[in-house]
Length: 248
Image (tube, rainbow, N blue to C red; front, side, top):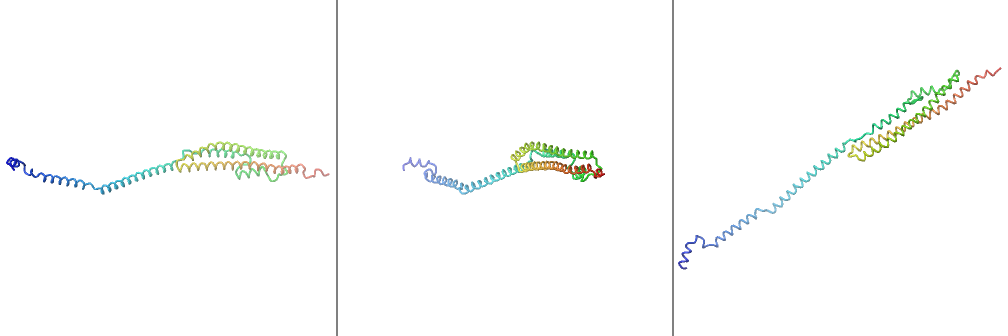
């Protein structure tokens, strides 16, 4: 080695002449750092965390769905407890009261047991005294005829009222059926059904009342016929007398 070379080498920093050793140390440090970074990321742990988070999210979703189902159930319960926003009770009772008023206007033979017995005994006695005059017999016959005519008139009035009620029932029936079909809950539907049953019962009661009036008129007419036979016999007896007037 020449002097210049020795002088130049003497001026170089310490270790500069051993450059490969520095590079080895630097590469070793980089390798250690990279290995340390790869060691921080754990794929298995990451996957487990993802699955745990997914399960927790699913649990939250299930809880939300459960709350929604409970909300729907409460809404349905509220609908089931909702009252029917209509009532036909007033129309039903009003129609029956009109028929009852007509029945209470009965003349002659009334629709009570005690009054019927009293009126029947007065108008249809089982026998007539010999002292009864023709004028009395005519007056009694006139009373029976009036009773019969009153009974037939009342029957016709009840028939007319029932017919009017049936026409009104058609509209009531339509309203109740529509309310039942459009009911939001069980209570509404049940109440509509109950009112439909009440309407049916009302119509049956009307028919029974009409039959009572019709049977009453028929019974009065038949009683008049039977009593007329007895009255004729009594009149014949009074006319003929004992027969002593024709003896000498």
